[in-house]
Length: 255
Ligand code: PGA
Image (cartoon, rainbow, N blue to C red; front, top):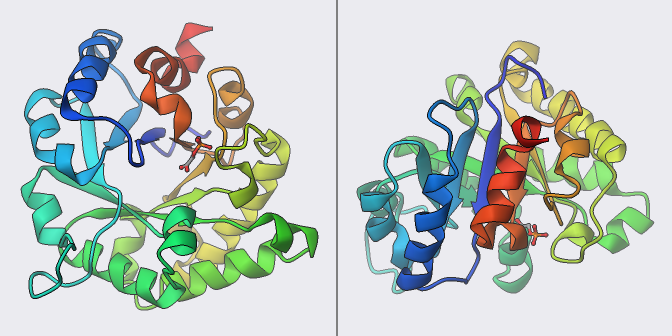
């Protein structure tokens, strides 16, 4: 972590929590937040909770959608537009999570349309990238990440890059309890920043926050955020528990 980029901790709740369960989470979590904090916190709940949550979380926490469809409106049954996310109080949107790539056949070109649409409507995209176990085994990690970055960010305006967040989530580390090592992920994230700088220049690439995600827990977060290239974390399972998520967000202060 470096002082020039604001640390960002994001909770990906996936398809978990009813409204009642979310209210219970925030009852505890809000009490654990300090008066003044430098960390930025974003919760990505299911779509059904966005609006109600935005009305009771206050100003210290932001919310985001777990996905979006690139059109503003239209006959697209079941989809949610960037305008609707904004309308529900969102500042951020997750794009290209590996579960969407795997179970919903999202391609880099679909992801690209989503990224461009997010920027157009004033949402900050959190672009998720990462290699599978098989790709890592074949030594293809850098090749895969380069493709995901180049194709996913095609046509992004130079001035939008600083609003971008990238989450490096090795697919083999998600929900497996087998996190990447801090030093290895730092190296990969350094490579990601170099690849981004080919698109937008070093100056802009230096402002982009790059998170690590994949089996982040209160027990291992310190190792990651002590690394100079890692600006925070995208947390799945451990973000469902308010105490655990607070221990992750504030690990530097708490220990
Ligand atoms: P995990 O999930 O923390 O449960 O591994 C991370 C993610 O999918 O974003």
